[in-house]
Amino acid sequence: MTAITLTVNGQSVSAEITPRTHLADFLREHLLLTGTHIGCEHGICGACTVEIDGEIARSCITYAAGCDGAEIRTIEGFDDDKLMARLRQAFSEAHALQCGYCTPGMLIAARDLIRRKGGLSGAQIRTEMSGNLCRCTGYVGIVEAMARVMAERATLDLPSASVRGARLGPAPGPASSTTGNAKPAAPHRSLAASANVGSASARGTQSPPPVAPTTKGRRIKVEVGSVEEVAGKTRLTQSFVLEHPRDAVWQLMADAQAVATCMPGMKLDAPLPDGRVTGRMEIALGPIKASFAGEGTIASFPAEYRQVISGKGGDRKSSSSAAGEVAYRLRRETGPSGVEVTRVDVELGYSLTGPLAQFSRSNMVRALVSRIGESFAQNLDAKLSTPEDAEILSAPLSMGSLIWRVAFDRLRTGVTRVFGRKS
Ligand code: FES
Ligand code: FES
Image (cartoon, rainbow, N blue to C red; front, top):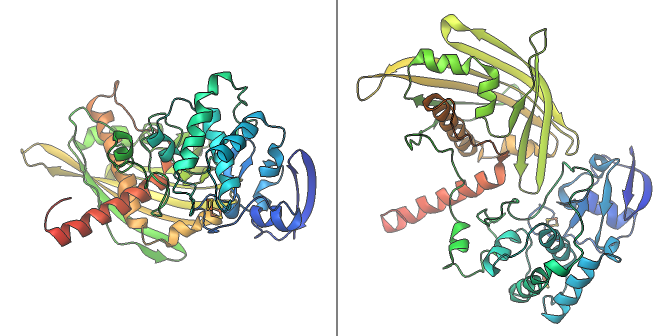
């Protein structure tokens, strides 16, 4: 059993729970706060949405033990919240609920969106709310209610942002871009899926995620080898070619700080005197934002143009930990135009424990790593092409958008097979 103390709707709560108890179950069964609904228990439907440290999150895929010390707010905790009161009224007026099962999660997500953003079109509201599913209403009333409240935003006393810099959440739907160009969280019928697909915004929901621009607009193809499980670790290889001489690539890649800036979501601190490095890797995994803090070592073999980085770290909130190493070697090759280019061979091995471990077993790992490698390779290329002005894709790695893109690619492949042409 694990002892936890957390604040729920302003009340301090202490309990002994099994480490595997999910926050949703803890709220419903230990505290009898049954306004938090459980739909899919997979982080898809958003029915279980609550606030953790001021950010919305899925309580069905959050361990209660990981919330030790956190402030939780459930739908029962919004009784004196003016924005929530206005939303409840608007939902009622616009017939935004039928059975009401999705409504607690929908209201919490809607309040969070209106608190953060205003002036969104109906299509953009659908996109932003695409992580909350409703089986009854067809979403029309929900969007109408939200649009009404959003239009009054200037006159509302909007609550401030996250109170404590939460590390879990935000939950449903796309990230905090104001452009509304992120992707639905799941291949279920969602708000975005039922939107007017002819609108630019709605079409934007099906675009691939952004890739780092390069000065020459190159997209770098990354070849990914097979994924293997060896001695408890997931191992795979990838390889790509940079159109730069090997010495120039080595100069960049031998600099761990420079390499880290090319990896989306990664930040390294200054090296310690004993050669170790500490840093952080941020991953947005649908509803979960994990921030792995850890330390590692770097071994360089300049004569072989080879470097090995090993490290391990953990994410306190999701109770996940990771350990692994990445080794890369540079090989000189001759490009099609006869100039020297560099092949980068990467070997990756890692193990994950905790809730995020599902991704070490996923069949999608190979495709995901290919996407990660593409961003990394293109950032390297941008940095080599214009060291001072390189536009680096540095946002936290979003597995959610990567998964969506993989699914989109697969769908496109299927359509191509059926119709014999690119969709
Ligand atoms: Fe569906 Fe949690 S119950 S997201
Ligand atoms: Fe029934 Fe939304 S009102 S699921």
